[in-house]
Image (tube, rainbow, N blue to C red; front, side, top):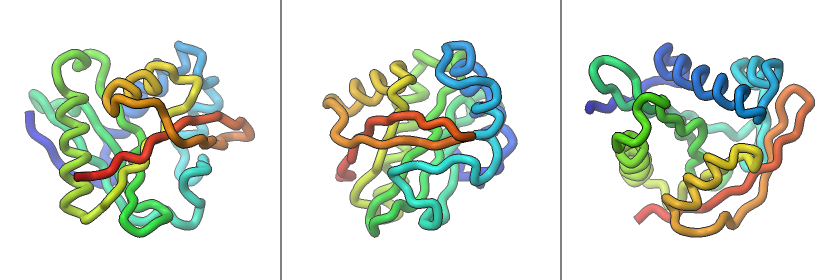
Length: 165
């Protein structure tokens, strides 16, 4: 497996996000219209990041056999020393092969290199797979509440502050 830092507009990372959204539509988390809106730049706002504070960031990707198998977006948060992790995704065919563990390791390493003290992580309550995943990985219950607005819909979220060591 190899990894790269790319821009948010990386075509393979966008395709992976699209696959994840399609599975979330199938699970009833989002409607097709909501998922379509989420793919438009600036279409969503979140309580954990003010609209005018998204500091520059990047996408971390894992590549296996020439295919992007996992991706995560990291960017500066509202508070100095904090970064926000969004769109943490592993291709379904690559799940159970250590890709999410490796991507999480890269996220923490990237935060350390960029002198971030805290990684903010949020998961939509409707996406119990994501909530359960972060509960398991971080080995604790969420400590934050939040929400995401998209296309006139409000999605409640829970979150964690992970202290980078």
